[in-house]
Length: 146
Length: 146
DNA sequence: CGTAGATGTTTGACGTCATCAAGTAATGCG
DNA sequence: CGCATTACTTGATGACGTCAAACATCTACG
Image 1 (spheres, rainbow over the protein chains, first blue to last red):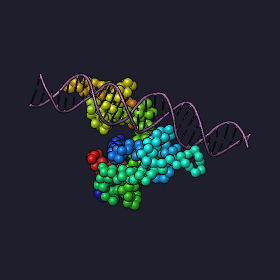
Image 2 (cartoon, each protein chain N blue to C red):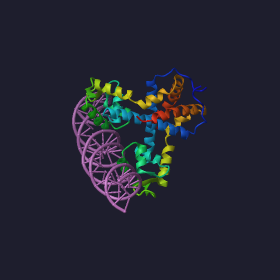
Image 3 (cartoon, rainbow over the protein chains, first blue to last red):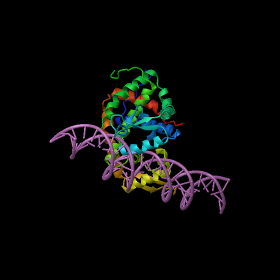
Image 4 (cartoon, each protein chain N blue to C red):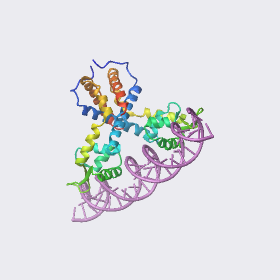
């Protein structure tokens, strides 16, 4: 057992620790994105684009107004990282697709999250598995909105 | 053992899961803040104010430009959630202090993070301790920036 | 079929967050 | 004193975020 068992933490302590890790990872992500001339929001959008996605779906994923997505995609399109394509079956929708350059940029951003990578490297295989299991149990409850 | 041991996850999987949890918690926080008429940034500032803090220190904590803090504190002060106080020993600095109302509001925001609280409640004492231990090991590496 | 209502996207107005550059005031040290 | 440093503010500018309104297209129902 490489994970020692500390005293049972307060829910508040756990919450605070979770928040700290979350913001640290976010900072790491934002810094890596900035390194490539992207805002964190732009990088976040790019990160969602595994396949073509309608504007509306993007807005839903980002939990923001659809009109907001217009501007973000405009700027990404201006840099050639993304393309709008007409949808075959519904002429109202425009599908957003990452260009080759866009895919490459987001790949590098992920690669360059040094701090996060380094931290994860300190965990052995067994601890990683344990952490993964615990977080996986947390996830569904946290994504259920009110 | 209530935590089953899953297959060893990829570093990428773990990273993605961590990101998902982080954004879910952030959404929860932002929603609770909005419920009290605060932007997430304002709530974040309020959350830092355990004691009096100079503007500059606040900017350092938020990892942003000092000029940015001016506006945020202006708006919080406008709502009576925060006060600027002259520093006794250095007349250049202004210490930001949460008012009673400010403390009350941030207390409620923390209370109302339903999703996060609910998710944490699904973990037993032992699992909480394990998670806490693992995250605590991750934290220092993630906060060391490049 | 044909129109009424729902849906996807964009535009415009507006407020907040973020940066940078410049200005003012106070500190501190030679 | 003089001069660099530090703390805070102001003003310009851009990205994000919301809402309301316009527009085209789809869908359902009579």
